[in-house]
Image 1 (cartoon, rainbow, N blue to C red):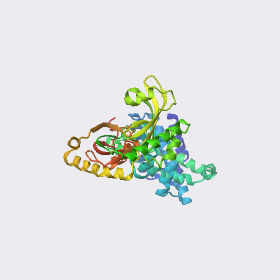
Image 2: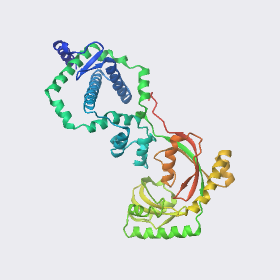
Image 3: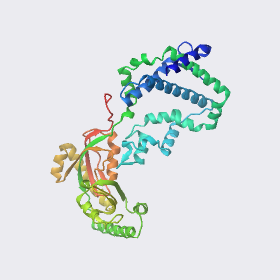
Image 4: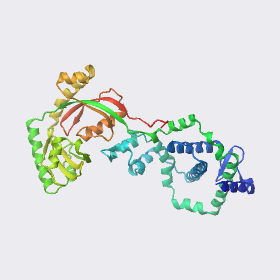
Length: 429
């Protein structure tokens, strides 16, 4: 590494006339890079190293950080010149469209965008447009300034440009400028105090999305069952029997859902993957244990609806299964006739508190504590998704508007007892 620095000194002696002047740190394609711009870039890369590795870089690592900083600035200048030359830019809508059709791979495992351990396209699309539950403003800025414009450039145009003699001469100028700047500023042994605590804090605050923790929330809810009328119950049973016969004949759950969505609003496939035996409802476990792998249960009553279970695989302590959830098929008149009762329960809970309201209405008050966005705390996934989508708009202690579950046939009155949707890892960690 010392040998490289001595080589840089020799380059400066040979090409001093090409080096930067005044407040310049270097020259890229005839464009001067100020010392301030370079130092800010270098500090950002160093701060990122510190936060990722919880230590200052070694002397050799500082040289790598230094090179990375120049590589970033070089790429930025070259691309900006091409963008300007070809009048290329990116609109907000182009950025959104690009993100919606091309999901960045590093987001596929982001906990904020997962439900039941699987990537949720609905949560992702919502985050792209509204920064909830994941703040994607920094990603959109990067796509607007770099990614989308780059896609508009023809790759061969850049390759041909870089291979030209003229470009080679400019790259030589950059090498000389870099060596000149190393002599003036870059001394790995003297740059230990380059980043102050306040600068680390500023970098941390500007990049909070990099250090995001899983959102957590807690809630309590009252469940007001909508009692189906006789005609609703008879119709639901008939449709369920028809679906069961189709499944036994070889029709997949997915095909059934696709064909029955209009007739059975809320029909849903529950696929939790492998679940610990101890966490499975006793009645459901009893149903699954007697099945062979890949076999189906007969329709099981679930609230006022039904479910058909498929056992996939059993291990020593876990079980994998799926369930086709068939909600009670209620007429609009049946559902709406109970909405006023749900609103009344909500107003009573706001006035007297959820517990007192539950006692007065002789309803059970259910509590769910320390939930993540991956927790399926209610048997109707659509209810869970609805609550998650509301977290950014409400604070601890707020009541949500009544939510109807098509799976269980219940109106839910929900109060957030905790809401931490913007948690980040503390800087000291």
